[in-house]
Image 1 (tube, rainbow, N blue to C red):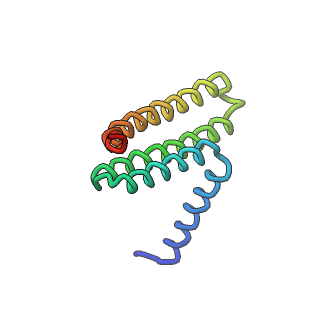
Image 2 (image 1 turned 90 degrees about the vertical axis):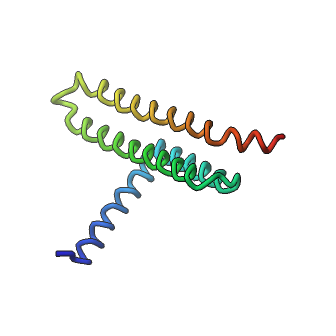
Image 3 (image 1 turned 135 degrees about the horizontal axis):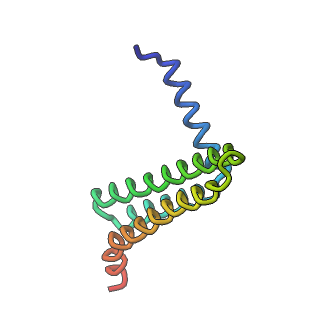
Length: 122
């Protein structure tokens, strides 16, 4: 059965987690700022809503991946004494996943924005 108090408590935990990642992870703050800039530009350039939806989905995907990267780093650090030979490799692989996703987001952003920016200069 749905309990409003339990729902509110879960929501508070999620907001606390978001606050922690915002406060402690520079990459998350940078990616958040990039997402905000992208969305502001999308509205200023009057990009069609379906392309804005794509930009929002990509931005959220990157932010979620940043959070997962932070979680994995902390988890691996907690187990460091037991699996020390794998810690650096695991962290590097997760960072590579974030990097590849960010590059894909950049390419998609360029593809979406290029015609609108080109029209500004013609």
